[in-house]
Image 1 (tube, helix red, strand yellow):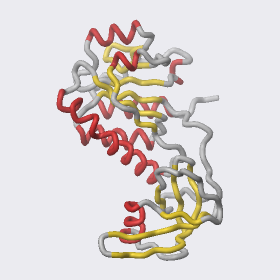
Image 2: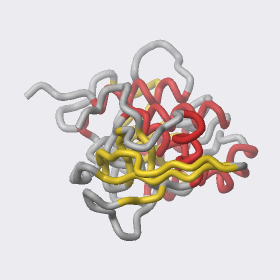
Image 3: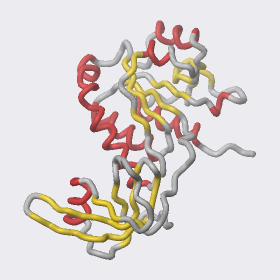
Length: 245
């Protein structure tokens, strides 16, 4: 199954009964509209489907354009191909300005993060924290669209917003970005499963002390001051890079 950039991909967000090769399935309204009105798909056109199961090849079985929308069904021509598990790092990113957070979420999906947790910290702006509860559906939709675009097989898990205390109470201790952190990670910690990134201004001194007490390791990327979303993605790219065998 080709995964090159020109491949047309449409998404199934949930599957109560997974369709099998040869079976026909109707696409959600937004995906049907995109396929019929934007991509102008016709019966017999090949495409790929993405879903929580992974990727599957398909062809357009039927398409109908009507006032205000469209209907589009596809027939699977191959099995679902998925990864056994999402093995990438887990990112806890402090809530920042909405557009910047959305952009970071999309790029974290492309970089292979397994999970993204919006993080509420001392320096998180009150407006960002107040809006977070109403943005979860948007975040999951953006993650699914980014997954569809890049051909990633497993979805990015987007959790509900967490406080730093809730993050530290979890079973995993990982890394946190800090200007006073280590430039080089000790052996074994470069494969850390969890990365915490603070908002503008970083974590407060009290938060850094608490993170250290919880077993988190401070890490710095270099002397240049980066925006929170830039730092998160630069760190994520380094954690996701293949290691020499």
